[in-house]
Amino acid sequence: MGNFRQVEPGRKPFKRAYLAVMLWFVGRSIPIAAKIDPAIAKEIAGLPEGFTFSLGVLPAGPAMIVGKDASGRARYLGLRPEGRKIDLSLKIRNIEAAIGMFTFREGTAVATARNRLIVDGEVPHACVVVRILDAVEVYLLFKVIARLAVKRYPDWPMGRILWGRFRIYLGAVLGF
Image (cartoon, rainbow, N blue to C red; front, top):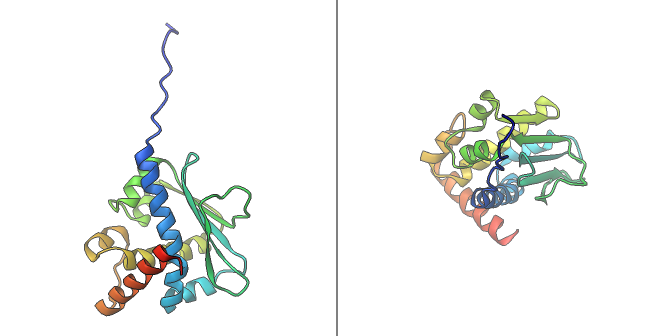
């Protein structure tokens, strides 16, 4: 009765690579969006000095770390949370849930409601981070896709979105 073979799940290298690229790009986009959008800058200003948050995939999946430096500006701190003091950790339960979120079939609010997102830290700070991520997604994604990813699509002028999108894409790719 006890003779059975243990089956190990697959590593899913393409999904892991896709998520690593997406987290890298979103992580690099947050500081740039804070420079060009006063609403995002205000949200970051409300966080404590030295505040650091991470968004990652369990178990041992890719992650991004963003922090607020002494001058009050957001900084992308990399992909590895090991050895860093993280004040707020947002963890997606598994790679399939992360793929659902980062292919924009499911927004952050829906993922939280379906218990796919684990928050380790203070809830008010988590709400601020989710608002920042939603605003960055509005800039990064076309309206049709962004409506799926965010809870409420903002009523911003098209010029603001397009000019912001151009600056964020350029800054994230070129690193300024």
